[in-house]
Each structure stands twice: as structure tokens, then as C-alpha cells.
Amino acid sequence: MTSTTPAPIAVALDAPDLETAVAWARAAGPHVRTLKVGLELYLRCGREAVEAVRSASGGREVFLDLKLHDIPNTVAGAVRSVADLAPDYLTVHAAGGPAMVRAAAEALPAGRVTAVTVLTSLSAQDLDRIGLAGPALDAVRRLAALSVAAGARALVCSPQEVLAVREEVGPDIVLVTPGVRPAGAALGDQARVATPEQALADGADLLVIGRPITGAADPGQAAAGLAAALAPGAR
Ligand SMILES: O=c1ccn([C@@H]2O[C@H](COP(=O)(O)O)[C@@H](O)[C@H]2O)c(=O)[nH]1
Image 1 (cartoon, protein in one colour):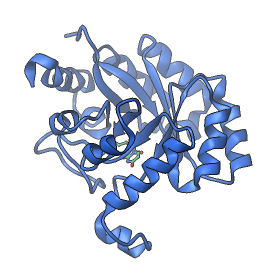
Image 2 (cartoon, helix red, strand yellow):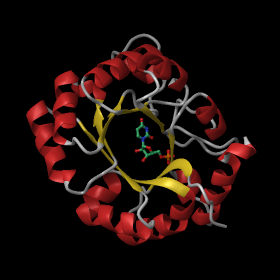
Image 3 (cartoon, rainbow, N blue to C red):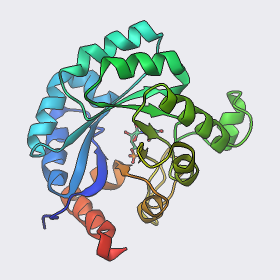
């Protein structure tokens, strides 16, 4: 089954080797808008992973999830090092501060610097322990606003915060939500989660989904099933 309009899903290709990532990209590519290359794959396979995944998926968008977090000068250099790969999305941690986000945005004028607000694996208790007192939503809103003011064109937040973040940053910023789990799926290490249907209803633009697809016996079929369930007529 091939979906005519690819679903607003970025499949997280968290694979231990390039062969597996390429097989997942080939299987899921026809059904989804975006393929995500994260730290596991990039640190093992490097730039080759981006080219291979793009080509195996038939030219889908590439989301390079490196979550850069360092002083502004170092982050700007890191962004310049991957700019020629032309990622559609490249992540930095919003907690690096406005000067760091601005340095990244200036180094990638053609792509979307995407600021990660608060990791979706962190619960209220975790946030308390690391000294981010108060509800996650407060920190997410604050980091979202400062990142957009510094030039980020996309944000990562949990689906539980997407409504409030949309209200904070308006309609032009792409809101990306990991922590997405189909009803009944295992949470794994994700803490702040919602179903894909709920995330889209609340205004998410792109759902990051990894293990519910890549951990399935048939990742292509899992991606096709999710795409069909999220098609405009099906919701
Ligand atoms: O806050 C964040 C930021 C990034 N991620 C990444 O998304 C995927 C989620 O994979 P699942 O298997 O669906 O849990 C993964 O690559 C993370 O590095 C995130 O989960 N939360």
C-alpha cells in the first residue's frame, strides 16, 4: 500500500547500522513526509547516512537530529559542517540560550533550525530534580518564545504542550512532537506523551515516531497503517 499524500510523520531511524536504517527508510518512505537521522546513526555512519537515507526514501525530507548544545561559536561551526547536507530540519537545544540559537540559525539560512525545548523523556519529577521547578509547560513556553525570537523556525515540544506553544508562537513556526504513541503502544523511555491523533488535533505539524514503526515486524506496514489512520478523511 502506498499513501498518495505522505503523512506528517518523521520516522526516527535509530538504527545500529546503515543497512538497517536504509531498509527502514525504503519501507516507510512511501508513507511519510520525513526521515529522521539521530545521534545513534549519525555518530556511527556520519554524513553517508544522510545521503543514503534521502536516496532510499525517494527524496523525502531529512531531519538531522543532532541536538547541538555548546557555546555559540562552536555551534555555528558545527552547523556549517553539516549545512551542505541540506537538512530540512537541524536540532539544537533551546537551553543553549538565545545567542547559541541565533548563531545556528545564521549558519543554516536555507534549513530550519529546530529548537528542542524540554526533552519528552523528562517527567515533572525529573524536571524538579534538575532544578527546573514548576510545570514542564512553563519551561517549554519560555524556551519556545526565546528560540523563535532568536531565529528558530521550528520547535520540538511534547504533544502535551503543543496547544500552548502554538498560542505562544503563532501559526508560522513548525511544531514537531516526539513522545507520540498510538493507543496501547509501549511508552519506553518517553514520559510526556499523547496519541498521534491527539497531537495533530492540538496543532502539531510533524510527529516524530520511532519504535512504534521501526520495532514492528513489518515497519513498512506499520508506517502505512499510521498514515492511513491519520489521513484527513480518517480522523
Ligand atoms: O524531546 C525529544 C527530542 C527528540 N526525541 C527523539 O525522537 C525520537 C523518538 O523515538 P521513539 O522511538 O518514538 O521514542 C528519538 O529519536 C529521540 O531521540 C525525543 O524522543 N524527544
